[in-house]
Length: 174
Image (tube, rainbow, N blue to C red; front, side, top):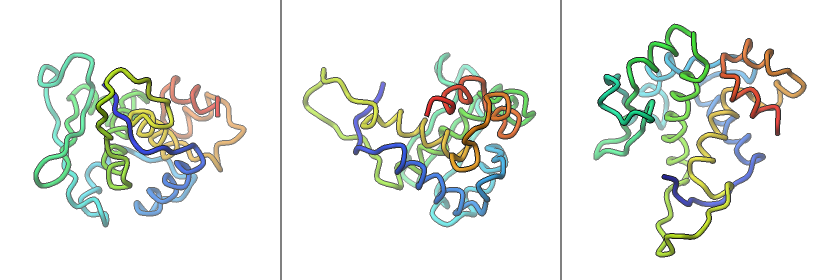
């Protein structure tokens, strides 16, 4: 399920990605390790309320590799054990992107990208107003900074930033 949120565009998301990297103390050409970042988040200004836990596969729905929920005292990111291990062992770029996606849910929420609840249940939401599109695009912009990846091939993106084939292919389209 997806929710409508405030409108944005790629250019704006690239600025937010730079801001996020700056908060993390990372340059634009450094590869981010989402697993290491999970442990650092509570120490970063503005992310003190973000926690995570590793859960067994059957604790989340079959098609949900990870999820982020807002709790009374902050955000809880739950990650399937297989996804966490795939990202930890740096074997699967997709697992790394799943974790970054959930981290970006917390960041997007803090930036004001909150669900807009509408009475019109059947309306089509354009991509630039879809919360999941915003979070996925933001995760890609953070993992593969535009200014240093322009002109790279899909293989170069995968090798340099540890992303999946799908993420690298998507990056080549914009």
